[in-house]
Length: 305
Image 1 (tube, rainbow, N blue to C red):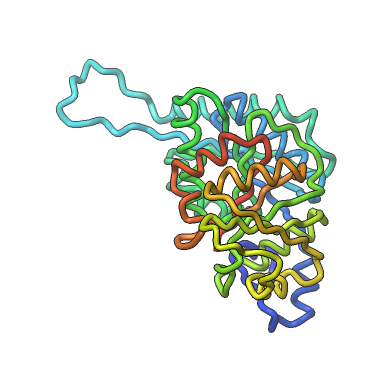
Image 2 (cartoon, rainbow, N blue to C red):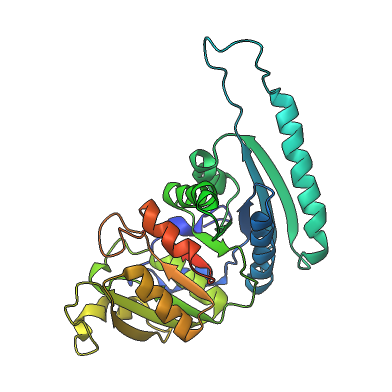
């Protein structure tokens, strides 16, 4: 084992040697990437990331700006000015330097604030970037506002969630950091299986040392309840030692069910696993993801299976 491991790529089973469990538990979340477009929403996400860094013992935050140089289209009149790629790069780096200076006073002791700019589309490059930077977490802002804001900012954030294997924390524009003490893990008990990212989940729980509430939303109204313990048996085994509290809620609207429960419990974080198939497949289609991300004041953490 070496320091270049990306913990979000590791899956731990009940057959993993105890010594490996202990070694992994000792590893900290060392690097957070914060994509930025220099907006107020991006600044807020960066400040939230710095609060997380202090709680998690993170040693490095990377501000990242992906800018795209538009390739000239054939037959377009030459009188249309074209952007100089060098000027675009310089402008991007200047923006990152200003943002860094604006944030330095709030940077936790022992944490380094770096930045990076690439001529690329954010979603297309984010997965390779997270691996190159050995990132443990991506923190992005989102805003609930006009429909245009939702389309422009929301689509970018959701595309990042869909195109990276690194966990992504979506921070609402009005969210102010407070230590994560209570987590709502929204999942479908019937879909828990071998592809559940057990280690990333456990790693986060170890880092936060938070109270864990596991929520199952039954949108089909079949009456899943605490009288059917077999539905959560595997998950209970996977979460052994974390003392989860289980909750069963009937709601035909998955997003509404999650948000109402999280608000009632005064959760600091909502955690979910976007799946290609299953109860939550609809959430991570753009429309419902945007709905969940845009209409919550509680940060949303997506961990991929």
